[in-house]
Image: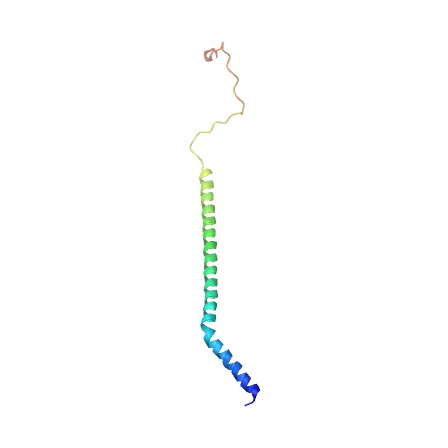
Length: 97
């Protein structure tokens, strides 16, 4: 064999040894990245679901309050002119009418 082929064989053996040795670490890093992505997506989804549920509850409560506020009541309504009555004169009584 020539010296070039021997050098290439040594480099090839070194690459293969590195791949075998570091495969577990590389796989672990890729798994951690994948798990981190999955956890991030699930937390983001859970937060969006919680915010959506809170907004729906707020809308439902406001609509119920508005509906209850608009219901007619059995109370009598007294219409006034908005002016205060004139003060009674001290020398008159209600029997003078």
